[in-house]
Amino acid sequence: MPRLPESALRLYLVFGPQDLAAEQSALDLLEQAIAGGVTCVQWRDKSEIADAPLPVRLAAVQPLHHRAKALKVPFLINDDVELALALDADGVHLGQDDMDPAKARQRLGAGAIIGWSVGTAQERARLDKLLISDSEVVDYIGVGPAFPTGTKADAGAALGAAGIATIIDGVSLPTVAIGGINKNNCALLKTTKIVGIAVVSAITGQTDPKHAARQLLNAMN
Image (cartoon, rainbow, N blue to C red):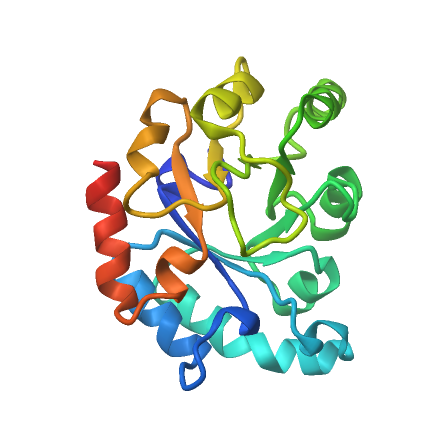
């Protein structure tokens, strides 16, 4: 049985303190997004808290993890393997410059979910090499940016549907597209073999996150 069913990747919310509106709480956003249909959550903290000692980072994210767990939605941590371990989170999502997935697997154990970002032909080659050595190190990949995005400054050039299709051609792992995706363009990705989309501002930047999540699902369907 996979650690993460493909259905859990259908609508994937990525967010952190830096994505919240002035009077918005992370817990409220999480609850509204899940009520609207979000199927997986990744905590991606790029604020000053990310550099704080582990107990401070843990205190900031524990209420979110507890709520996601109660709502039966996978909760992953971006990059911070030690936080994921201390939190007993469902897993981590790693970038190409983060901890090697094989080392993260050793650190987190066989039951943890591990996602990995892949966005170029060279990174695809690195993924292939990793999967040859151990096909169960990574559970899914995130590919992007699908479209131009202002959420991640170092995201690189937009791939578009054709670029994503090329990168994931022949990949056996479930794939999530990320980067600049919103209700108006997500349908353009239907020609690819992705199983879901990951979004930030398409939900966090909306006045009604619950409704925004529902609109995304409707547009994908």
